[in-house]
Length: 330
Image (tube, one colour):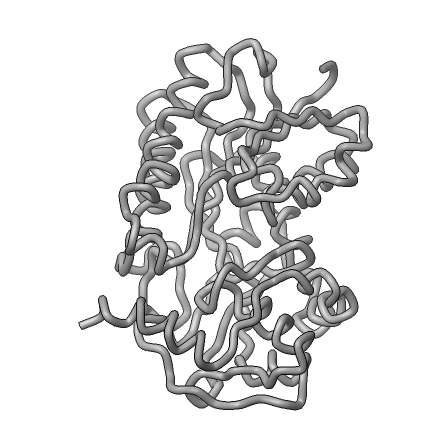
């Protein structure tokens, strides 16, 4: 590949595939890596038609020296596995995928003298735990489950490697990203995905508690733009929160999808609100969110057919799934 080349791990996932499309529109050459254990090749249907795109179907920790160029412009690291309950049931699997393999990948880049202008790590706001007030990057870390721990260790490893080996790395803690292509893998996945599948099945939306819980939703186009501007910025070895900075209630979300709903008991073990302080990322990257929650949800609802194949989560199945999580909460 000639010209400026970017590398995207987890390229067939929700955020990774949008990052690939974004970079291709910016006229970059893109190498996407994904083992397709969580991502879908359908997410790359547009990218695969572009001659500037190369796809490697493999685990990012197994990439070989001859498969990527010596000089890479930007590296966007999205590969990993998510969801809370599965991480509690299989903690070692999560630590290996999200933390250990990230270290192996950094060592691969370092030992093979791969040159890059910026490595951007996709971190998770789950490291803040149950903290429900406005959160800045200095808010106390409060790990509540193996998923959060594995992502946090991955992040801290990136920053340590940046410090010791002088690598240009930044970490971006994503709050509640949503948009086309995201999926629900269970009742503890994206509430938007759960609601859309219930709407498609003519099933009332299941709202836990009073529905006044708040989430800091950030639309996918704003997410990838922030990552791109972060890669272009002069800043290194820093952490950034990424949200819209204006949380919306679950009640408001439900009304943008359906008028039919039913209440179920409040789920323990989750923060009542997520609220990102985004002053740092706005200042350093000259970035701000452009898509309002209402606009983003309109796009989602207009493309509701994407969720036809998603599992239907009824109030009964959600209660059962939640029980598997809350049994670990004291």
